[in-house]
Amino acid sequence: MKLHADLPLASSIIAYGDGWLQLPQERLEHSLLLSGEGWHQPWDCPRFDALQQAHLQALADAALQHQAQVVLLGSGARTRFPATAWLRPFITQQLGLEVMDTAAACRTFNILVGEGRRVLAGLILERSAESI
Image (cartoon, rainbow, N blue to C red; front, top):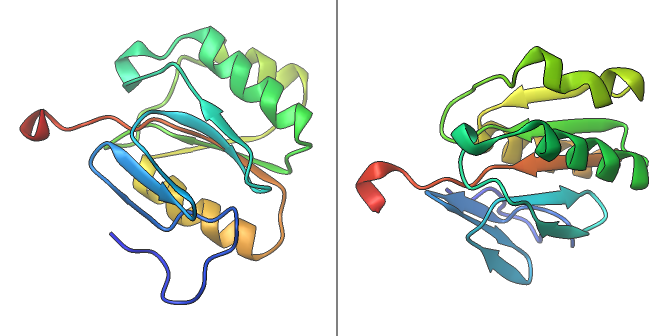
């Protein structure tokens, strides 16, 4: 699905699909952490079922490093919530976490970047069984 008709911001998500995401300069086919400033790094969480507390700790640490106002978790093809106990890094660091499916997280990320908000997203890019 294409997200923009206008020229994209350097940090915006141009398009996304089954197991992939297009940034202005690069197509990615792995889960990632992505900031509104354009920084990104691979996130070793290929599907929601593989999500562990350490993944959420890495997301919280990156949010603090990038001084994020909003933290998004794109949970894959559908909205799924992590175990409550794993949210401790967000609670202790007073960070809010918005959980939604990855497609919604991509759209929300672009809206927040367009508003000039400091946002960080953990996006799980999993492939559907049909595309494997």
